[in-house]
Image (cartoon, rainbow, N blue to C red):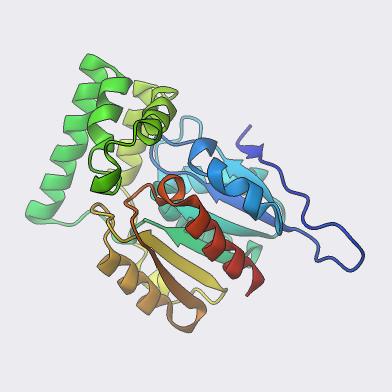
Length: 254
């Protein structure tokens, strides 16, 4: 199934606010594990579903699969590649998204010239490791740059990230790398977003840095709130789940 239910009935009692349908879009080689630490808190206000992309190899196709399984109207949060998927959902069906959260993500197409060549080289280098040594070996290499450097010795955190990646195949990795390298530009789309939007990232995110999120929030304008999570890198939902959940609950209540 393209969407997997995650728990959440909202708060009980007379007069309690009905829970918000919330779709959570994971990033590259990620699954519900990246959202799992947040779910007990989010269940206070939301009925959560985690998107699945299957064998999709472009962001628009991923967005269509998400939309096919989503409620008619819903809040949408995307992490990393999932943030780019979320933007394609908004591009395709803006009337269905009632609020938007973009976590540790980007909005521009692959840059021309040396910068684009360098990103392509790094992604292909990781794919070669996955193909030749296995996904686990690639994940162990990848994780080194994806968390706050102070958490690199957190064995439980690194093991959870590596195990999550290991559940995906080399073929899935190839498909998702292609989707990212061929990603559409969302610069003009950001200016059209009018729903309450949370733009969030880890302070130590070296892949999708704070300045990139400042640009996203500025391009969205008055609908956007920027939050920077301290002591967290790219995998902020797993590194600092309490702080991220607090920001998302505030966003759901806006």
